[in-house]
View 1 (cartoon, rainbow, N blue to C red):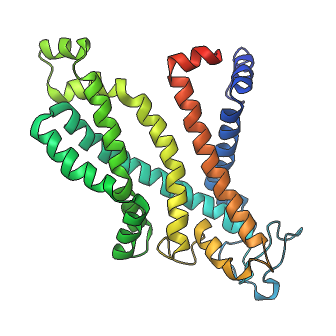
View 2: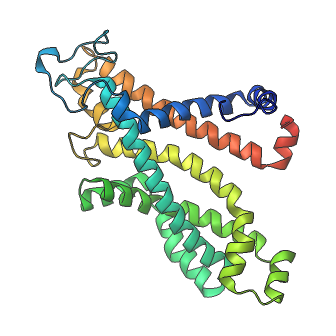
View 3: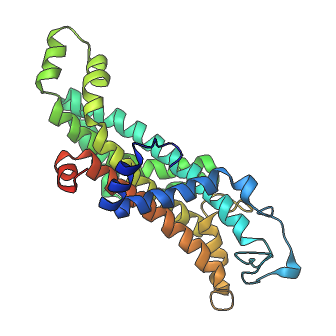
Length: 289
C-alpha cells in the first residue's frame, strides 16, 4: 500500500473485492517473501543452535513455535526454511524457463525436422516420465546440495514450459506483424525476441507462477526423503521428516512446517489464477477490472 498513490487506492480496493483470492495470495506471498529475505534479522535464534535441555517444548513466550528433538527453535528454522524455499523455487523456475524458452522457441519457430526432433525425442520423453520421480532419480544420482537440487528439479520441469512456448510460438509465428518484420529483412533472432516473445510471455508468466508452487512441494518432498539440502540447513521438508517420530507427543513439529508449505503453495496458486484473470481480456471485462 505504501507504493500506491491516493488516486490508486480506491482502484486497488475495488480489485481486491473483485478478486479476494488474489488479494489473499498476494498477502501470503508477501509474508513468505519478507520472512525469507529478512530471516537473518527476524529469527530470534540461530537455526542450528542445539539446546537439549529444552527439547520438544511446545509453543511458549520463549519459543513461539516450540522446539524440535534437538532443542532448536522452530520459528527460526521456519524463517530460514522460507529463505531456502524461496531461493530454490526462483532458481528452478528460472533455469526451467530459460530451457523451455530455448527449446520450445526453436521447435515452434523453425518447425520441420527440428520441431519433430525436439518435440518427439526431447519434450515427449521428459513429459512421459513423472516429474517428481525424475527429480528423485537425478537427486539421488547427483547427491545432496543446493546446485544439485536445483538441477534435478529443473531437469524434471523444463519440458512443460517448452511445450507451452512451442504452442504459443506456433500460434503467432504466421501473424501479419511477423510477416511484415520478415519482409523488412529482420533476422530470425530479432523477429523472435522483438515480435514473438513479447506476445507469448503472458501465459508463460502464469505457468511460472503456478510452477513456483510445484517447486516448493517438490523441494519439500526431496528434503523429506533426505535428497535435498543436507543438514543442518533448515528445510521445511526435512523438518517434517524430523517430526515423524514425534507426531503425537509434539504435534507442533508437524503443524508449523505443514502450514508454511500450504501457505506458500496457496499463495503462488492464487497469484497464478489472478495473473490469468488479469491477462485475459474477456475475464477482466467480466470481473470489471
